[in-house]
Length: 352
Image 1 (tube, rainbow, N blue to C red):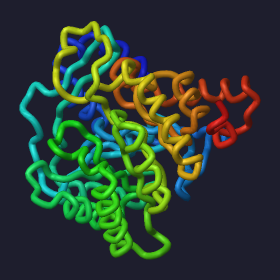
Image 2 (cartoon, rainbow, N blue to C red; image 1 turned 135 degrees about the horizontal axis):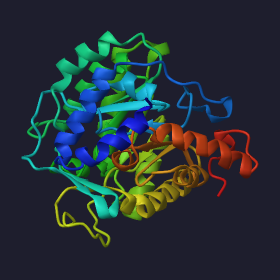
Image 3 (cartoon, rainbow, N blue to C red; image 1 turned 120 degrees about the horizontal axis):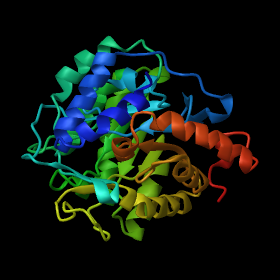
Image 4 (cartoon, rainbow, N blue to C red; image 1 turned 180 degrees about the vertical axis):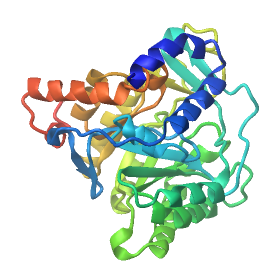
């Protein structure tokens, strides 16, 4: 029986559980199912970003698989790439529960997880064991909440994870670690990226250096966008991931609308799309963009690609759409490309 059919049968029971318990069951189910061969996709969906060949442009965003437990199972569901983490040097429990909320009426999620993960040592053991398997693996790195030197934390994580990653994602945009977003400031960001790149280079040979992707917040001022774009181009980053969750609150219908934390899902769509356009304009197309936030169907992904994204990622939408979401979006993208006269994803990027 297909995973999406199974999910549709289980969804009512899962939604009677609190969101974090249901998420734990989803991870357990993927571990139990094990790794399956990734499905084949048409060549028209393949694309190159940061020197990496992606079989399709639809990825799983960080946050679903915080400890790198099921990246191969996610690739088996049809995701063109899986980004695990955020992983920090030391284990940390994150913020007090409850900290994850479904906003069903809004098809949204609010989380204030706080980089809960089992730390670098556990992730290293797990990810080293799957090192020679195929598939694009992004490793999203973060800093410990109580760290006295967060730049050093990122450098440590880059050194440890670079040999195992297809790309490294530097997460300085979570709203749930106090002070973390301050690293998006121009001077702080320059020093941070220099430290990460130096650590990556020291850990890897010239031919095995994974590109560095930077994940930014949607709640940025125009001057911030321009500064980050300049730094990203100057440091030759592999891509900008636009964007993380938002601390803003559009009109929401759910009883959980007043919960603190980062908002994701459908209400983030317009803001994330606009921020993607802002970064496309600020970079002039000189650096690839990854579109994230409010993407639930092929039309959403296509709009992001036409606005300048070379890749897209989903997470919250899978809560509502189920594990077949990657295949469904890819199938829809094939049709939309043909409809609009494009022969490849790369050809369509930035053509709105």
